[in-house]
Amino acid sequence: MISFENTEIAFRIKNNTELKQSYLLFKTLASNTLVKAGSVFTNAALKVGLPISWAVKPTIYKHFVGGETIESCTKVVNLLGDCNVKSILDYSVEGHHDAASIENALAETLRTIENVAKEPNIPYAVFKPTAFATSEVLEKAAQNLQLDNHEKLELEAFKHRIDILCKRAFELNTPILIDAEDFVYQNLFDEVLFEMMEKYNTKAAIVYNTLQMYRTDRFDFLKNSLEKAKTKNFIFGAKLVRGAYMEKERERASKLNYASPIHPDKESTDKHYDKALEFCIENIDRIHLFNGTHNEKSCILLTQLIEQKGLAKNDPRIYFSQLYGMSDHISFNLAVEGYNVAKYVPYGPIKHVLPYLIRRAEENTSVKGQTGRELNLIMREMNRRKKST
Ligand SMILES: Cc1cc2nc3c(=O)[nH]c(=O)nc-3n(C[C@H](O)[C@H](O)[C@H](O)COP(=O)(O)OP(=O)(O)OC[C@H]3O[C@@H](n4cnc5c(N)ncnc54)[C@H](O)[C@@H]3O)c2cc1C
Image 1 (tube, rainbow, N blue to C red):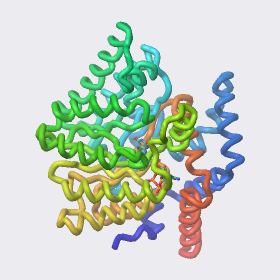
Image 2 (cartoon, protein in one colour; image 1 turned 180 degrees about the vertical axis):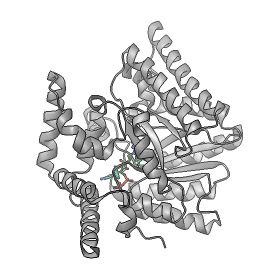
Image 3 (cartoon, protein in one colour; image 1 turned 120 degrees about the vertical axis):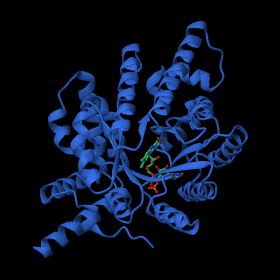
């Protein structure tokens, strides 16, 4: 069975100074109070235009983000690539929906697709569909509400943009992952992405939809997707994640008085995540799998499923992925064993990636959870290095 315990492998790209910086960062993130205060301060500073990059850039930004532009991520991409860990450059500009930002996001995403075609260390492109229309139109369309003429045009323009991106990915034979965000939009995205898969996934999985397995309906959705793929003769690209918006979804459901779409507890999310992994491997001829998780058990399970099915560790239909700056012990140990691994490497100007960074900080505040694990591993590696000198 694969082990993720080898910290020498896990931190091989970090020198002692960088390791110490990671230690201090996760120590800070472990404090709920500090993270809450930091998030409030950062949001307020942004609103009034206070410069905050001096504090953010050398610390949390450096740890979780590849750079401001595609080109400035090259150093990180090469560093990871030397260890057989690939990169997925994620233009992480969130929450900007005016016409200029939409056009800019489209042009930038096209550049990332073209970059995948040129760069052997980057196996996928990625985008967030909410970057390509206003949230009002997406929400109304996802709920099949009546749109006025202007909104209808906006919806058509949105679908056209998604088609431009998927078509370009198809022409260049570069797979593209489409992130999932709030539940309220996903119906629309599912519908559009089925159309894209029918068009572009006839020979290989180019277009990947994201299934947030914390949703109670997603396992059935996966089964139905397989049926659709068989009937319409396409390959279903499945990016599995547990889901990043649990609290927001629960709050919204309770405020608007509808049943929460999220599993009642972590155990049921985990159970459905692992069931989905099994289902994908059973149907690997029709479903290509991108396993986006920091959960060690799910990663171990996938390595076992690969073996049981008699597949090669580096079967091109299966990828493991973790976020840049998190769970290096999983990524690097998997890569050493010969599995396909890629880090999601966000990039973008500091000001625009802050929502992403705040999510990472908040997600990392629990000492019991991710941060405790990261800190423990970093301390073990620091001790190991001390002893070996
Ligand atoms: C490469 C990659 C790409 C990603 N892309 C997306 C994306 O497109 N969309 C997206 O939403 N997220 C995305 N994420 C984030 C992901 O959804 C998770 O939030 C994050 O990875 C933590 O889950 P885990 O499986 O890594 O770890 P774990 O620590 O095992 O799981 C934590 C997750 O379990 C679930 N959970 C926790 N407590 C409960 C509870 N009480 N009840 C029910 N469920 C619970 C939540 O989903 C929580 O995030 C991505 C993550 C990675 C690594």
